Image (cartoon, rainbow, N blue to C red):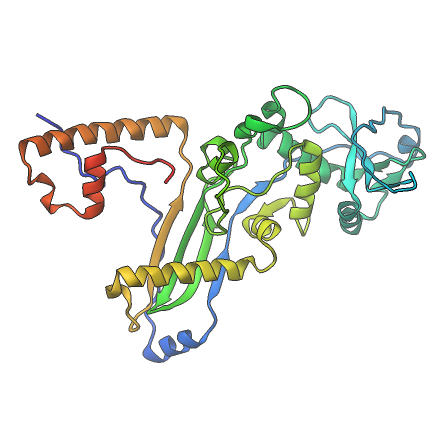
Length: 357
């Protein structure tokens, strides 16, 4: 005898949003007039801790280390002259090797760092032109480098050890994150959009929004409400500069808001509102019964999740068993599907699930 499994049992359920409070009629009329509000919450990245002892001026003046100029970039003019595009900076290796690392940072980033940490001997200009970071500035930059190399897996992803993340190596980067969206609405009007995050530091090869990076699909367009990774660079040094610019207030956290602003522009909030309003209008076309102006309601679009390989394998096995059971029931009773919805019927007939749909 086959096991009994409901077709909806193993669908991923979104988190339950708070039910909007009850408003008086006057309050509802006021909500109709107000602009749509939006909340964007969650942290994409957090810097790791670095606690190097601050060097004295004498120690900085006598410090010796090899200066790596191989990654230094210049602007070359038609007359053959060059100007520094970036500046070489130096910090101690946050991975504990004891080495002093030299690499490029953009002048824009350095100016921001100096504005934030520009006192107490935190920046030392060496005679060889290298800007030696010290104190709070060194620890701050080193913390972000450690996050990139360790938490985002840049070191291990670079399997050929050429200093660049190329091709399928990016699949091993742990820069993916889950997205959640729900909204409050009053009839046709979206009153408030809540954009949030689930788990972060997820493997990019498990991230649905990143699959286009490893395929030949050139028609894919990133959606601001479903994007599950920030734009990223292919070397530790370039991603460090990128991260320092995303962390606009230099507080050691790249928020979802900062990540979206970096890629989609400063009007990213309005883009989310417009996208949600369009979604809501389509929803009401299919479900007219939801168009109720007498009360504030909430619609939970759900969680754009990231499944581990083990969870995916488990779900595929569950749906395989479910499919076998449903096919067995249909062979015994042709009217078995008559009470199911269109979606459930489709699932039953196909006996499979698109894990990344």
